[in-house]
Length: 183
View (cartoon, rainbow, N blue to C red):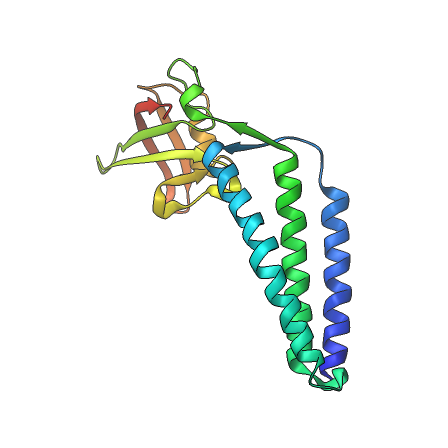
């Protein structure tokens, strides 16, 4: 039973992975310098720590005998598939990355990728500060928003003093762009 599950899982994973690799275009993806450093660190960890650990786990599980009913072996092989898939994905992203240093941007006050923007909600007068970043580095807890998010899309191209209308789940929100920084 478990072996059947593993075969089906591996088959589905390989199909999805092949679709992913076929659909990956050579279009550049924007990353800040920090985002590129984070991806490089993740790749280093995957290759030097996670991959050897899973190889060791597979070897240990094999030593227990019959692989057809060995849940530890199947779990380790599944984990190996995820690790190898992530390594491939990160390597690809780094290979097509357009690395942008926000401190070197000269956009004359316009909101662009990498900019740090201070906004004021026109309804609540609450201020918030976001940096517009790539998908892999977006983290709302750190006030880093993905360039493809609704709020970032509404801000791109605007300047200090402009009002951005953002379609939020609760309706349209309006934000005054108080400050644009390239830090």
